[in-house]
Length: 230
Image (tube, rainbow, N blue to C red; front, side, top):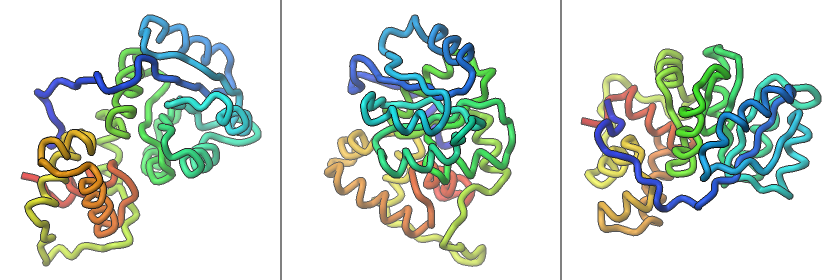
């Protein structure tokens, strides 16, 4: 298991209030989610949208930090909206919140840039944790997503590793990859390794290019599948 089991998350570097938007075509559901998270004072809902097109139009004015996005919506669905938003606003984290417990959607949505995938029966405490984690590390992986991504051999790789050849990593690359898998941010990794955050990002970019993945989620699962971490 590569994720840190004992280390307690610290959120001191996060903003006092995280701006959240929710997109779902059912108003009752939207209001229910907002109400269920009301007790978390560091989460502030700044926007509601009833479909993907409505979401895309409202984002420039509200500029949320995190978007909770349903998949099946009229006019423009959550998949198309996620593709557009993650490309246009890479700083905004999109968490899919849907009733679709379908393996095919998870890997595809991660490829589209989603930072997490939650089912609509998720407890409010986990939604809150997902919001906090995607703000801190850029992604949120729960047991459901872990199981699906591993089973479905996540990542449409441009690079096809050979089973007969060992993937060689430098000590620095291995250390960065290990800390990414433990959910440390680039800034935290830089502090631990006594290098600059820019160097950390450069190493991550190089690893993503070599492994044929698009983000930190891809790095984690590539490392897991190929047993690159001790």
